[in-house]
Length: 300
Image (cartoon, rainbow, N blue to C red; front, top):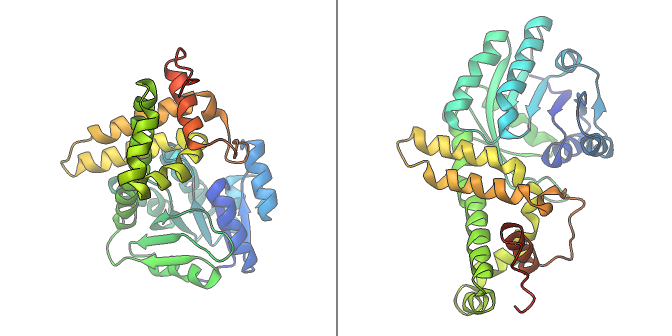
């Protein structure tokens, strides 16, 4: 497969940065912004991603489609693309790059192949591309070697030898560790705040858990603007573990925690609009106030 044009669905935080990296390596990058937010439109414009009016035209023009959206939207978007492939007869590779359970990736493959397209299971571990850095794009399934060619265009692709579902599986395990931990940290710190124990708890962390404390300080202020879209990702991890015969309850709780954070005023912020001067302790205080307005934290 020769790659000349790549479609990004959709150009949000990750998608626009991936599109920009591919543009920097002289690929044509397109998207369909019909119904998308002003923020997404601005990100796409900033990255130099070309807008096409319909999904049908996007499919017709693309050699590779990279789906990068919230987990809850994945099945619907996949069927949209499949419908367009069916109508156009396009010879296109569809890369399912979202945080989904392996068994869902397996279910989606025949949706694309049944319409005449080709499917590759891809997961992304790490933040959006930036100068000198690319996240890891894991690829699995029979078409992984085709996707591997993006190594020539500024991305870091790691090909797994296993079938569709393997790339999604490694993402589920990794995100369980990272985003699961951030939810745990946030909840226990909120509990300390509500009990008036923030100061002695942080002193104890400083004494015996300095590395963990540093991760809290660095990460927790960035969580609220992203929490809403993480809810469905945590539900995918829940489904992954349940499918393997393990308890789904851990990540039911994590999903509920992110749902709560997203419902607070801090959850209204975007990554661009969040207050970058707000400390992690102030973030926790405001989250605790959303749960218990009578807690003002003024004496802590």
